[in-house]
Image (cartoon, rainbow, N blue to C red; front, side, top):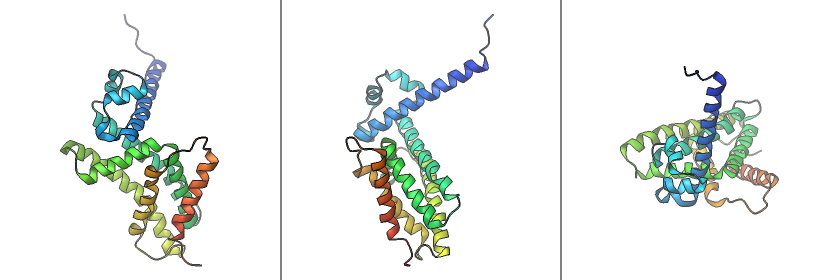
Length: 217
């Protein structure tokens, strides 16, 4: 009689599968960043990971499924990076500064995911997708709106308390996040770059972006 798997065996299997999925997403994000969506294939991702195509197809049905999983992972990184800061104590301007710094660090330390996420938005805006892909992209755009609204809420608080200039909060957040997302285009880690150097870049980004939003003293 075959012995039933123990809870520990099931846990090990689950953890192993999650670890394998994470490795595939890392490789896929790198491939999409280097080659773009159109030029990347499952073979490309397998080459980056050093595995067979079968290992990837075990986790993902198609290249599109894999791409959207990378995009979703990037959005979760972003939401997790700023939501706790947004809901913490402190003046809105100080929280907004910390949020910008945190997002800049996520972009620099997880650049392949963030670049792929930007590509996903570009695909949505261009409309060069199938109906099924557009449906998935729509759910990801909803996540992006959720992320943007975290900033909008803090900016609204800042306007109400006089920390920030009076303007449409949604309008203010669009160029702010646009500048942050543009880091996926111009930023590449320099040889020997340290975390201290990355934090200096994040500090400079926050100071620059907030200089146009802060109320005159």
